[in-house]
Image (tube, rainbow, N blue to C red; front, top):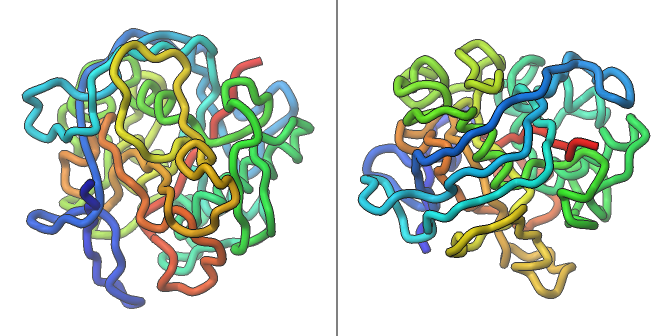
Length: 319
């Protein structure tokens, strides 16, 4: 098992993110296989009222695709068994990463320290648990059932899935399979929407080593922005190697890799998808996988415990 990270010198501290050339300490993998899919709609208003702070979602139809990487791919790792994956339910997914303004609108606080006061930049320096708590807050605001059971509040919160995400009517993070399916956008490119990463993603060579407002670059075929670069994104799933064989509506919860169910120690680690502004190009392919380095810890109140390279976007199963 290999961790992979970049080391980025900021005015705060040398913080870990993605791998620069020659540096590796967090796990990642990549591939380019994709199946067919199409969007249904794009909206700033759901079936339960308008979203706050300009949030909008794309609606994705159910479908199948090849998840994992092909043998012989130059960046393939051993956790990427190529397998057919079927998603039997349509779903909504954020057209952009959750922004600082959107996070504050639903949560009432802003966790960002680095590159603060950029309301249209992706929220970052959040934990997986804060991301889950945000989706619960969205569900509450729009009168929907929560998808996560959480203890605590604010920075000091711990969460796990309370039900099968595909069956939850409320907001949540996308499963890894949903995220990868959406990132491909029904197309076959090296990166989401293009073979030229500069067209679609903020990465090590074009970002100036910092975040940028969302939706400035080209969207993919589903009208979704920043699936490559800007920040890596938490998904609902927790890390294990891909299984072989055909998978139908796959997901892996925290309790599946942490049998105790209430373990607050970092024995289980969340999956991140998509590269950050500090990642090298090959880490921005739709099926690259990153294993979060701080997966089980509560209370990220100290600046040195928070990761400015990681954010998230929302999802919801279509009713």
